[in-house]
Length: 334
Image (tube, rainbow, N blue to C red):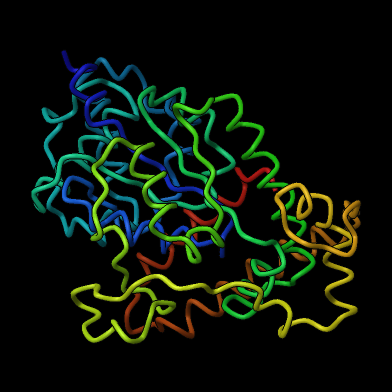
């Protein structure tokens, strides 16, 4: 009975390369009356799945309680739950799925909702283990022109554009490969360009895939890139999605675009984007990739401190976020 009940509440995972529109899609789905979108990125569900054995036999109540506490202690979960978490008796099955489901159902019920959505973008790399752990889960992969991803990540997080488009190629290819393994009943691809240029048609596809009724509320957004005519009350999410593509054309020089397309041209062409180098699939050197990965970690840490500062962080929370970040980075394939 527990499995049947959980199947009726099948979770939804929004995945995609960072900078591809996962937050916008989550913002739209949060308008659905039955969907609770967890408002932060936990990122650690794949780690818990991989390391579940360290918690022992979950048939034992004490071990299951320890796993539940470990999930509730994640920084993102603590910031949202504020200590209001379910008891171990709310866990319907002794597994990572059971624990995650119990916590998200509890938070969803507080908003009168019954089905949860998780948005940790780079879970794109871990769809297969998540799918195996959660047999009723569905995955929506939102992708975007890799050149726009590169400009977005450089502008927002100071990430090197060559590193960004290389990671874009690797993660999107892996996601599409794993998605084909999952099949069309569990995996859906959506382009950012389609979402912003044809939002109604795209959200109808999405709502049909996840089995929720379509309504105009699914087009309401509080994101920056919405029609300013309707953004008179962001708290009520009264904006509408508008096109926000091809910023790379004004952001990068011709030489920079050529270098990006030397690496991502083939995948750009496969996805239907125009490119001057449709056969491009160069791979940066291993040394450069290691350097960029390290630089990204340092730059992101600096930016987080600049944006949020020490006043909003305690030594404990900073150490927790650092530890979770190291574990997350260590797991990533790309």
